[in-house]
Image (cartoon, rainbow, N blue to C red):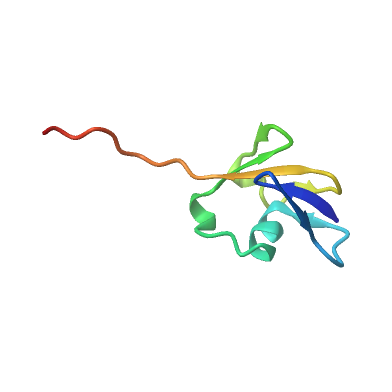
Length: 73
């Protein structure tokens, strides 16, 4: 399966069906509990990670949102 992950080509061998959760495992994504997943331009609900299956040619972005801001000086 040929995917684009975070703007780079990725080949997942020997997988005909792979959920978003499975892809997170397959790619050893750091901090999977804190990642937001965008699939073909759509942000996925975390509750859908086990149900949504990636397909050949899909574009996936793994996003991490950071809190913080400017502190007082």
